[in-house]
Image (cartoon, rainbow, N blue to C red; front, side, top):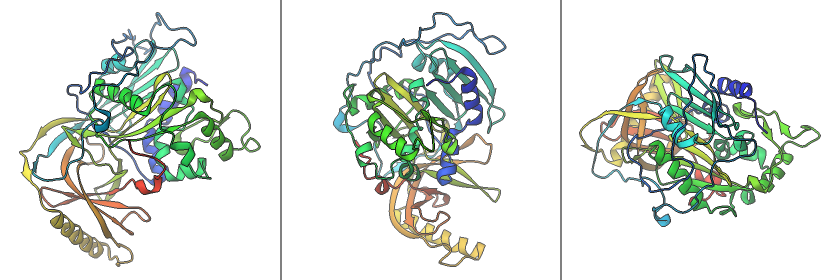
Length: 441
């Protein structure tokens, strides 16, 4: 099922921050991603991302279509051969332990180059319309929207990027497959057999990961190695959708759920819809960024919520179906590398912070309980304020714990600046234990 161009316009305007709506409505979150516009890291040879597409857009945003593919025509055959990375070592930047000295980076929210996007993702997908409009959050910035003759569309927004092909348009977005609330709704009897398939006939999981890594490399997006990747078959997705949305309540082949700002969704899938879904942590300047779901930022007494630093992807037999990149950032400068405080000092900083917060808001231990369970090193993000494009990416001790600490019923992380010892923000943690069927590869 394919939307018309007007339908896609409606989608881009109603759901400009689709990922924001998803996490805010499901669990209160919103989102970030980081990119490094540096050199690519692989030698992937992809026959379908070698040259750009000129749009020749006039002042109305419309474009004369030339050489548009006919219905049913696809880009050149995908090369599924492995890239040079050793599959046993994974892809991307590996985790750090916080030992040694680390710099703090000054960053600005950025945007992918439209010409690069067309070169990498829209080759052989003739662009019929290009639109530009002011960004919804950063009003001084301009977003770009591309609509292709074959139904593919791109939202190249300031700080966030989205690529969707017709094959993915009526699927739930990949990020929803990481949400426990969604999984319980769609797969009420459990998702073990739905999500744990490793390889499909058209390509192995490793080949699919290599394909996505190649696109990220071409776009200059830096990523970490700790991917969450799983397969969802068309057969099992069909069974799950008909169970969740039975025909007697939801007649027809689509269901207008608009679940967390998405939809409509197809109810029936076939073997050509066997897909891989991926959650990919991002990195900056060789450092993995925090893998939390949501970051709280206190600005002027209010709490802002930003998503964790991820990309999401869907791969099908025809290649990349969906790519979403959260919070695109450019490095504006960096400090000298500094020695870090110890884990013990970070925990004491959290204890002191908790005491002050209790006193400030007259809270009891029951109101603000926090039991430390783990501490991890990462790089965290802090924006200077609502609507501001500047901020920092800083060495961070994530002091993780359980209990009621501004986030009832969730594991949270208090993000302590590993250089200054300051508590910078509070995060909700993605709890892998809730998703045991989803295997890390």
